Length: 411
Image (cartoon, rainbow, N blue to C red; front, side, top):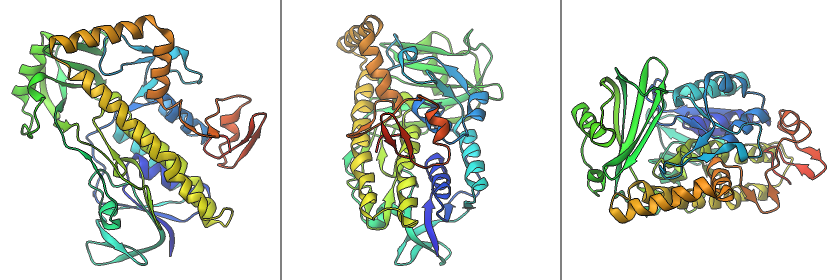
């Protein structure tokens, strides 16, 4: 029998698999897709996630391949938060397609001894593990659902997922641009809508945004290239010569959170535990940070180093983080979709505060980046006296401030 079955080979599940193996637990990851999705929902790796990668000695390829962005937006406001004020060796976000992030995390998980199986569709929970669509069973002591917003694990465990349905829709197109922005990146906001342009590998750019016509509860239908072209031109005054779409998609602001992150031997992490509008690009990061919290705890209990009660601290610590995530993504969504004259005035006032009030800019940046997460006594410690390097074995580390848990928070 396996110690842990992780359902879902996205960034959350793959990071969890590596953490479990680092702690000595046996783990199998089951993924429904036969192949990795080439379309990357997430592009942004935030400072705290970069720190986590450093704490395990795997940060270098991310730094080498990711594009460093030294600031960030809050709700698409034109004045951006300066990450230079953050107490971290990584005062920037990294732009890197999720597909590549997954590839790097899978390499790490496999190198540590995790088994990753694709084309395995989990249909339910059974007493000895999980059942698959082919009628077989994978036995495990614990099951972790990292299988997205439509989580089969969450449904089978009977964990409620309350929240609100979509009232607005964003759109994106991964396209070729004949006339890209001069610096590659661009951000445009106004009464006609807002959009960002981000370069991707392979000569492709992502254009992502929203417009007043998207403020509807009903599903607007599949995005077409002509619609994208017309909408982008209305917002930016140009369509950047877009053509040859690689991926066109819509996404809504439905917002939900699981009432429990643990139910007996079943756990939820990442999008299986929380869903929201992708404002600020925080979703993948919070999922990886969920896994970083759960992994060492589950491994310690399996190794007999800790009592089962430690596992309850996963919900106690991470559920409030998820609730905060929903609050600030909702706030950003309200700003991003404030197309009325009053809404534009509100955006202007708040944007000016970010530009002129350094403390406000820093506090928002800490919140967006995940550096402000505090588990009561378990505050995150910055990289003093080579702390991150000393955490690479995944064991507690003594410091002048006290004993540091394997996830970099005070014990």
